[in-house]
Length: 129
Image 1: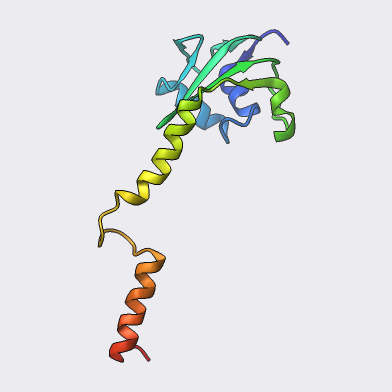
Image 2: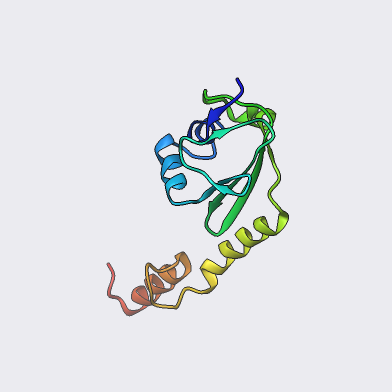
């Protein structure tokens, strides 16, 4: 197999759960093949660099082998190499941590601790049976 459609390859490599999601990412210019925006029908060749932007991280993969059949997760490293810079993973970790720090008190659902404190307060008042 010399060439495979990018949307099929992304689905087969388990980067996207469905081909529809891969096609949508292509249409939103979130996938670059060798630094060129890729349409869903764009073909991938062995050795191509594929960049996938899943905000806030941009993953970079190198195609080692091609297939259009979905493969098991344990076989994926034989077909692609993850060459994503470490800074991108650090950015993802910072985003995870930042999501909890930036939440203003009183907005959204209470945290588990806030809920327990509220229950304790109401129990002390005798409002809850």
